[in-house]
Length: 141
Image 1 (cartoon, helix red, strand yellow):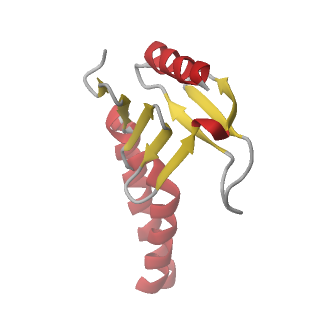
Image 2 (image 1 turned 180 degrees about the horizontal axis):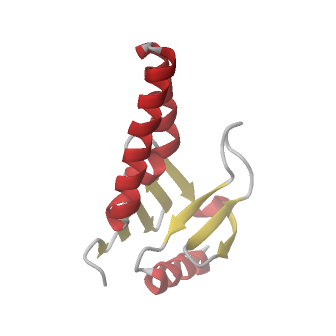
């Protein structure tokens, strides 16, 4: 079991931080943002446009630079980020689809108009443990 995963009576919890796992891509991304902001300032000579561009970059790159914590327990699946938390109860799970990097757990229906109908769980180094726990919890439902 990897050091960022923990098993307890309540559930199975692990963390994924893509920027920490890929430091070269992280640095290249930050350098690219700085380069583009510099070009925007040179062309417009306005900090206002740089602030708008920085906001767009922060929103689009946030999933890469923030840590995501996943928990699979008796109540369902929880995904916790820096600001947003998403929970999918077992009674709402319709199916799941496994890929090379993670598993997408589909919900039966959207709860909100902006909902994505499920949660994508990234494996990190926990593929077998995550799939075993997911199958165990779905067998109870």
